Structure formats: structure tokens, C-alpha cells
Length: 211
Length: 74
Image 1 (cartoon, each protein chain N blue to C red):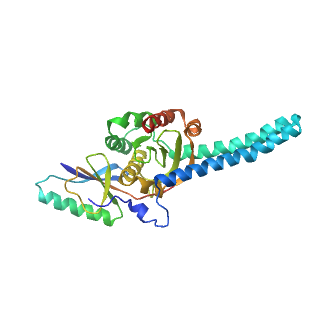
Image 2 (image 1 turned 120 degrees about the horizontal axis):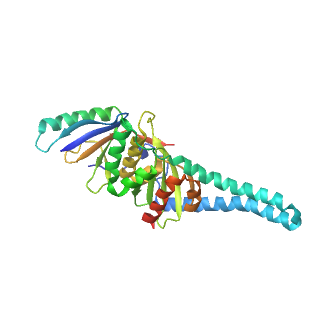
Image 3 (image 1 turned 135 degrees about the vertical axis):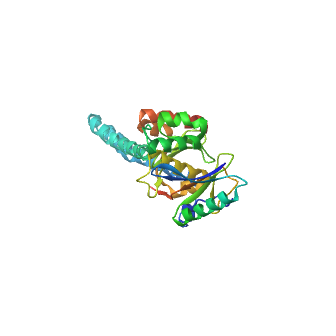
């Protein structure tokens, strides 16, 4: 057996390799950004009410705009992960069978119910979809959302796309996170609000494993 | 029984299988494995603890070796 460096990550030497420390720093940056958005919209709104209480509706609209920005960010994270649908027949059924074997008994039920594969790792607990992954950090309070997909995978059944990402993650977790693009980091409740109902259960399970 | 499979549009395709004593099957598997690598596929060997490892040579003692395509940031 050879070294466990993801080939795709090795081909991107300009990217700083993701680590526990870099994820922590990224999380803090996202929190600062979110606080900045709230302050940018919240302070003028409060000031306007202080100057003229009758302007409260205008202030509320202004503050709502700021909250909408935060919602849009979380929604981008939620949409990126793309769960797989139910197996019908043919290739998707075959692919789902293999994926079920790969995730094992523990995560198979969750995969069938939510369309996301749960995989515990060193950086936290992962939920993997067709074109992205969610990392629930230890403690379960913060999530990082990643956009990552099979390079030329348009012809692949959805479950096969998840299997590709799962294998890459297992080969090299930090390398997997290095190759992926980030699209959201924040409190897990913010992401939960944007996830479809049937995938919220996956996030709950991942939080339980992560905490 | 060890297996070499490729993830593809059919779900997956069995490329080769071999046992510890079957040298002819092992040679055939190694040949197929190298051809897949030359086609740009990556190989992932599933380890007994459930993790996976990137391999450039076919590990004949692995139960399952999966050929996959490269991933990229979305």
C-alpha cells in the first residue's frame, strides 16, 4: 500500500492543505463575516428607529435584507450537497447496492431515508451527496459545506457519484477538503433551516455522531 | 475472493477477480488494473477497518479494489 495523499489534492500544490487549524480559522472568518453583515444592516436600522420611531417599518425592511443575505449563504450550502433519490432500477439500483455495501449497515438506513451518506472522520462527521458534502464539526454546533463532484461524472448514476466522493474522502480526508470548494460555514441550525425536510434527519444524525 | 471493479455508467463493472493461489487470474487482474490507470482512472483499495487507500499497484491481498474517476471542486 502507498501513501494516503489524494491524487487530486497532490495535483493542486497551490492550495493550502486543509487542517483542523485552518478549518477553525475559516469558521471564525465566517462568523466575523456574518456578524459584519448583521452590524452593517442592524446598526443603521437601529439608528433610524432611534431618530424617528415612525420609520420602524423601513428599519425592519433594512434589517430583513441583512437577514436575507445570511439565509442565502446558508441556502447555497444546503443546495450544494444534492441528495440522491430513491433507486428505481438498472444502473442506479446497482450503484446504490455497492454504495450500501461501502457505507455499511450503520449508515445504510440513513442513506435510504435521506439520500446522504454519513461518514465519521477525524475532522468531524461528513454527510456526502452527489455534488457536495457537509462537515459537522466535533460538538455538532458548526458545519462547513463543500462543493465537490466527480470531474467527468455526468453519465454516472447518482449513487455512483456519492461512492466516488466517499472513496476519495476515505483515502485522504484533509485532501478531500482541500480539493473541494467551500460555500458556507456557520451554525448547524442555520443550515438545517435550509435543508429539505427529508435530509434534516441526516444532519441530526451527523450532529449526534459529532457530539 | 478479491475483486477489481470500476465505477461507471452501468453502476459498476466487475473487471477482474482472483484468489490467493490463482497466479494466472492475478496476472490478468494486474494487467487490467494497469490499463485502467493508463486511462486516467484512480484506484482505491478498501482496507479491513473500512478506510480506503490510494494505490498505484494492485494490492493482491485486498478484498476490494475500486477504480474511480478523479474528483474536482464544484
